[in-house]
Length: 271
Image (cartoon, rainbow, N blue to C red; front, side, top):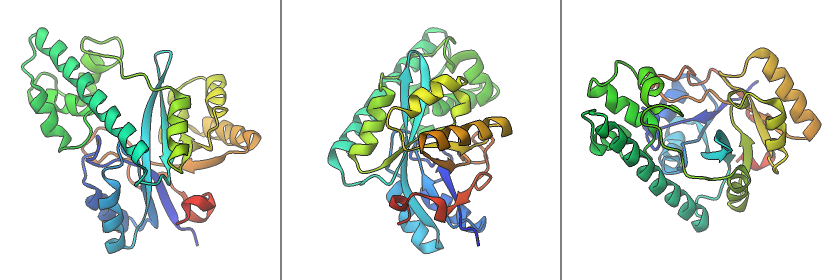
């Protein structure tokens, strides 16, 4: 019997639209054995998810998705099984959150200079107290009727090279992996198809990564086969995750759409 787990899930602790307790409840409704809560640069939603998981009989794995940068290329690193009481790790995440706030404030200022009626408080309302990011700014732009959709907000204003884009703080891939390892976790390269360069993907995997996310909505069949072979050659484990952000988020991955067997996880994550 397969114990299905979805290892890439976001909550209101970053740019998801459902609270951690709501995610656990939904996972139970979808008959998932477990989930990993992997919010952007934050583990704040994990304790609530674990508590709700106990109520709904859903195994919850502590996770995070760190946003690294390599020569203007965004590289996301999933971390699993970190010690949430590790103070240096929590301080580093807190620093990232402050840098996120400053980045979005600068993007709001750029929007204001272009005559857009938007405030940083609008973004904070969309974040529900979680770590702020571009999706929150995009939703605020929709609410203010500056754009008609989140997709339009990114296309016109928030993607790299657009009118309001500001580069993210510089966290290298090697640093992100080291942060996760120092906190006792394992590091996995997220949605590799979005990198779009197999040679670069393999180079990042050689930065002491432990695994690669093979089953993800943005990886097609051919790419998944290539990533599995890459993992085999480099002796890495593979993972599956929907990258769920909530039905109203604009992301296409539905909770439980990409799963793997809990028993196939590394022993360190079978807690």
